[in-house]
Length: 453
Image 1 (cartoon, one colour):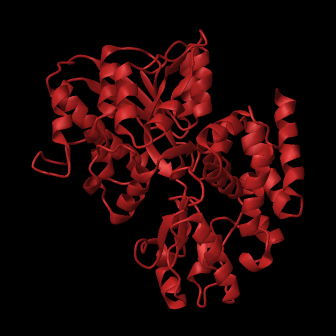
Image 2 (cartoon, rainbow, N blue to C red; image 1 turned 180 degrees about the vertical axis):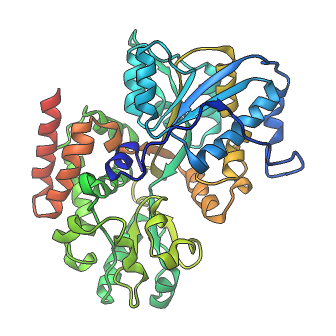
Image 3 (cartoon, one colour; image 1 turned 90 degrees about the horizontal axis):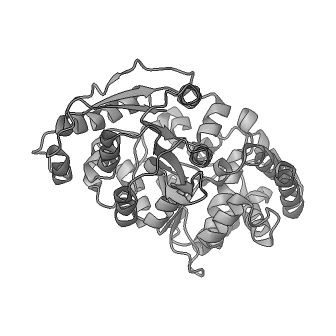
């Protein structure tokens, strides 16, 4: 889930970890063949003793522990020390430090829009070509990831300022295998098959989709993820990017078509648990639980990789067995590859040092991904990282979806200005499920864009 959505949901209170060097340990020996130890070798030949890197980011608790293990291997290899400061409020704290002339060497941002603003203001250091080359050559759909971190600097020239590290996956459909087996349904491999299955379930007297849009002040955001996934499956990535930046207006026919495609799944009372006009009052975290009743109230739920945290207690620890997921498929009839929607963090350099540049190179190495993969809460598109390093079959299967992706699209609503992405886009989706036409909703969202230009 994006930082903006997380804050809106008030998932957790702000906590600032005590500033300290990495403090992680070396939990894996070089006899463990899951890890690409050879990718650590170049750093072991470097002597960065006495150099310290300050690294600020959003990871706390278990995530921080996993990160500190990643940092510990770098420290052992190079002799450098990494002071990591983790906080849910880190973004505000970093900006305060920046204004005081005390920026960290490195900072990890969940919002690419912030990275774009800081790059234009001259507050970021362009990353070395070795980083961009590694992304292009080692990340699946590498061009998409390189583009995600590339922004105009103060001179107007584009440079790579952000490295994607620790990403999340949204293009998933959750289901209960036993329900599918009893009904004789198979996992759809294409969007055409998913549409056919949706119709088939209704013909058989069932309800295909569990959908809920209620999320307090962020109500409507689950529908924006649907639109984003559909845009990536109906239009080239270049059109998606132009839509995000409003180079193509929101009320363009291609965007209206995406909204209406979502409407196929959501606006027919026979196709959703409840009714179309009740979706905005169904808490998004409760909506998948309709899959777990007997008989099932609904068969499928499209949602990101975090949703098991909201499952019925009996199913939270049964992912991969009693409840599973499949890739939200692409159209066979369109030549658009296998796109994936998601989010993640971009690591940037704010205060340049040789050790900081070396550390950024380290983060592009397979070992820097595998160490966290062996923990939890980490996915990567790095094609050089060994899938066997993942700590569970569930994470490995999600990692494979990233590796099979031909295009990556970052959550569009998080890239748009807040008044649109976390404003009119969210509310527009609620209006759509409550009866407004796709065209009217798109016109009103475009009007909100025009108002801030």
